[in-house]
Image (cartoon, rainbow over all chains, first blue to last red; front, top):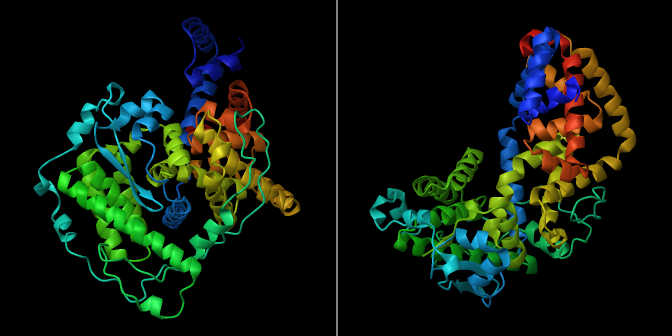
Amino acid sequence: MNRDELMAKYLDGSLNADEQAHLQSLLDSSPEMAEELRALEGLEQALAAGAPSLAAVDLGFLDEVGRRATDMIPAAPPAGGGLESIGAKLGGSIAAKIAGIGGAIIVAGGAGVAVWQMQSTDDLSAPAQATEQIVTDIDEAPSTLRDLEQPPDELPPDATTQADDESFEPQADVEHNAASNSHSDADGVENMDKSQAETQSGLTDLPQADAPTNATTEDAESGTVHGDVESEAALFNRDLQRLNQKFRAAQTAGDKATLAQTALQLGKLLEGRNAADSRKYYELAVSFAGKAGLREVEQAARLALDGMK
Amino acid sequence: MKSIDYPALSDEDLFELVKRHNDKVAFDVLYKRYDRRLFSYCLRAMEDRDEAKDVYQQAIMNIYAKRDTFKGGSYVAWLMTIVRNQCLMAKRGKKYTRDVDEMQNVLVASDSVGATDHGLNEAVHKAVDSLPADFKEVVAMRYFDEFSYEQIAQTLGISMSLVKVRLFRAKKLLLEALSPYREELL
C-alpha cells in the first residue's frame, strides 16, 4: 500500500492496526508527508464548514414545492387492508415502530375517512416510548390550544389560493445513466396532467362548518368556479375536516405526538389561505412536538414559521 | 389514539407507505429529510437559481408518478438519480451555452483562487468549482450534501472504491489550488 492509499484510508478512518503502524512510521520519517496529511485534514474541515447555506427565500420555495408535491398524491384508498397488513408488507421493522396496539390510524380517503383497525399481535407490541408520548392531562397543552376549540378568525373574503407562479408543465421523461442502480425511473408521468391541473387551479370554495376557519362563499359567487376549482376545493375541505377531526380526537386523548403532527399538517394546509391560523397551528406543532420529543416535526414547524416571517 | 411514529421510520419504510397507501404524512416527512440537500445539488448543477428551481420542482413533482420504478435499495440514491437526470436533461438542452459558461467559470476560478483578498471559505468554493466535473460532483455530494460513500456510488452508478479514489484525487488537486492558504489549513 503506497503513501497516498494510506493517507486516504487514514482520512476515511478505515486503517487497521498494521496500516496505522505503517503510516506512523512513514510520518515519523517524513515531515513533508506529515504536513501534507495535516493539510488534508484541514481541507476536509474547511470543506465541511463551507457547505453553502440556503437563503430564507429558498426555504420558502422548498416548503411550497413540498406542499404541492404532497397535494398531488391522491387520497388514500378506502379501508379494506388492516394495518397489520401494512406491517406484514413492510416487515417487522416498521411494525415494531408503529406506536400502539388496538389503536386506529386515520388516513384521508377519497370517499371519506378510512380507519384501519390495528389488531393486537405479538409483532405489534407498543414501544415504551409510545406510551410515554401519550399524556392524559390536557391542561398541559398550551393556552392557545383552547382557542382552537372556538372557530378561529374568519378568512378574509379573498382567501383564495394564491395563484401559482411556477410552471408545472408536464415533461418528457429523463434519461437513464445510472445503469448499475437496482432501480430505474423510466416510466412515464401518469396522472400528471390531471394532478398538475388541479394543483395549478385556485380555490374558490372555503372550509366548511367543522373547519377551523369560517368559510364564506364570496368566491363561489364571483363566477370564477369551474370544474378543477370545485375538485380542488372539495379536496381541501375534506382534508381540513379530516385533520380537524383528527386534531380534536388527539386533543381529547391527550396524544401530543398526533397533536404535533396534525398541527403541522393543518399549518401547511392553511398556508397561503389563512396565515394567522396557519401560524397558530405551526406554533402548536412546535409546542407539542417539543413535549412529545418529535424533533423532526418540531424542526419542520419552526422552518415553516421562519418562512412566514 | 395511537399513531405511526413517522420520524422513526427509515426512508424505505416511509416510501412504502407512500407507494401503497398514498400516505401524505409519510411523503412529507420523507421530503423534509432531503429537500435542502437536493436543492443545493440543483443549485450547483445548474449554476443558476431560477433554473435550479425549475429543475428541482420538476423532479420533485415526478417522485410520486415514478414511485413504481423504485424497486428497493436506497431510496435516497433513487431520488438523487431522478434529480440528477433532471439536471442533466436540462443542461443538455443548453449545452452550447453551458460549455462556454463553464470555460469562463473555470478561467475566473483559476485566476482568483490565489487572490489574497478572498477568505478561505470563498477560495475553497472557487477551487471546488474549478475541479473536473467528476471530481467536483463527488466532493460536493460528500462534503456539501453529506451523502455517504454508498449513496454517492449508487447515485452515480460507480463503485464505492472509485468514489473514494476520486475524492482523494480531488483533495490533492484542491490542496494544490489552495496552496496560498496552506498555513490556514494546517
